[in-house]
Length: 99
Image (tube, rainbow, N blue to C red):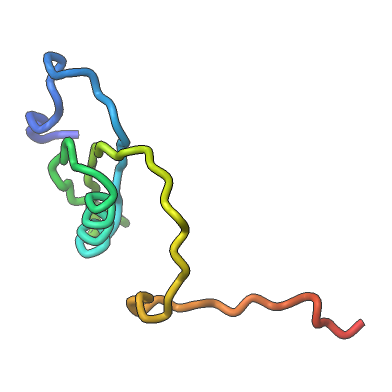
């Protein structure tokens, strides 16, 4: 892969630790995922967004390393108001089949 690779960590840096994530998607998807991950912890390193080519044109790749505190949180119930336009798929209830 051609290009300037000066955005990666140096061997002189402290050892890598934390959660490492590669995000691949549209710019809007990557922005939303990066915001959600940053809300879960602290971004320790963010690479340079790289546009993809070929059949993935219009999509990008981004590397994030996060420091996330290992705490337990209660599970939040899903709320239709927080759905943000997602679609809930109906799953068939096999208990109601006529035999």
